[in-house]
Image (cartoon, rainbow, N blue to C red; front, top):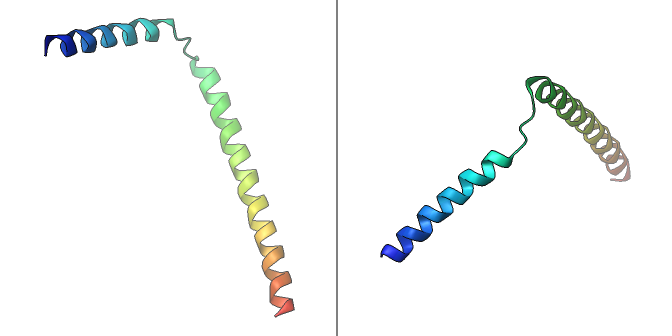
Length: 63
């Protein structure tokens, strides 16, 4: 049992050490990237809607 506890403690310390190495983005970078993600998501949603509508219209005319 002690063997598993020692491994868990070592893992926890390793995780803490790695998290200290992480380069976290600043507030402005997070804002900018959020705008990019929302914009691209919106564009893809509109594109998907248009393609679906065109395909649906085409199939409706065939039937």
